[in-house]
Length: 121
Image 1 (cartoon, rainbow, N blue to C red):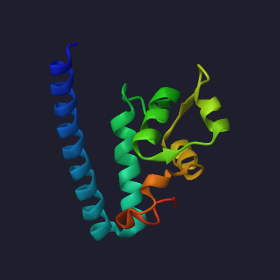
Image 2 (cartoon, one colour):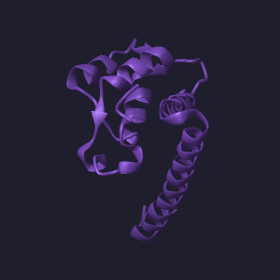
Image 3 (cartoon, rainbow, N blue to C red):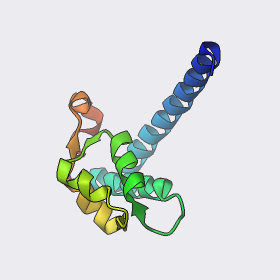
Image 4 (cartoon, rainbow, N blue to C red):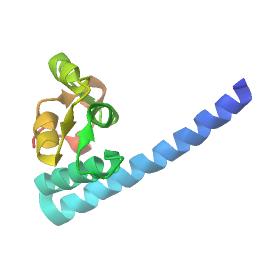
C-alpha cells in the first residue's frame, strides 16, 4: 500500500473510531441516566459482548475476548491471556463479566473521570 493510500485509510479509520467512541459515550451516559451507574456498566458490557460475538452463538472465543478487552482499555493478567490462547477457549456472557472483573484499566485511562468506578462489575 502506498503511503498516500495508507494515510487515507488511517484517516478514514480514525474518523470511524472517533464516531464509535462518541456513540459509546452517549450510550453509557444515556444508560446511566436511565439505569444508574451499575446498570449502565452492565448494559455497556452486554452491548460490547454482543458486538464482538462474531458468529452470534452467545460465546466469545479467546481472540474475540482479547480484542474486546484491549479496545475497552483493559489490562489482562498474563495467566488470563494464556487461558485465552487455548484453542478450545470459549466464554459466555456470565463468564465474560467475571473475566472483566479480573482485569484493570490501563494507566492512560485513569484520569478519565467520566468513567470512574468502571472497574466494578
